[in-house]
Length: 188
Image (cartoon, rainbow, N blue to C red; front, top):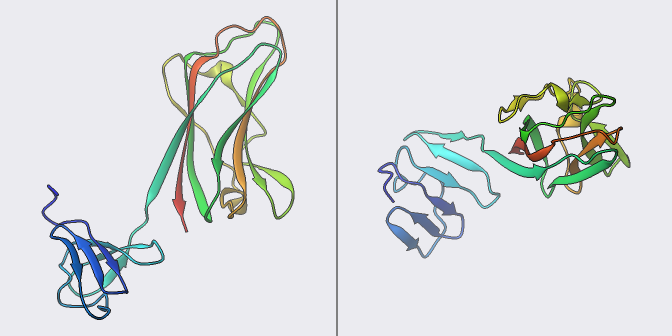
């Protein structure tokens, strides 16, 4: 690895993976072993990342993001599956962009973003408003969405499903091509 501080994986079964390669020991090493180097990042067996500062372990927040291609269709509602939740997480950011924004002189083109909450069998709105008007966008420019103030709605659980729906209510709609929606989230 080019990073001098290194990135390592410490497993409680006596296996360490780091800049020096695989290291096997006959017994489990405690994470506070003197052999662990200051500044390195280690992942424990529960997939949590920690940084060892030479004295203590500091938990690290890992941000992930996914971008999904989207488009609008005249006089139709089109759904896009964005993120099947396989581990509890927190959604921290949603943005949208189009190469050619949708436009309709006689109707609207709206985006809704939702988490299907399997525990309640209901869709939780992820945005601060019911929908976002895609006609207010500018071509080739990313727009950050304002998220809901309901914190629980931004914390999908294992088994939930995040999706969006783009709805055009008029056949005169044009554009709406080469779009993308991006979601950033952290894993609990």
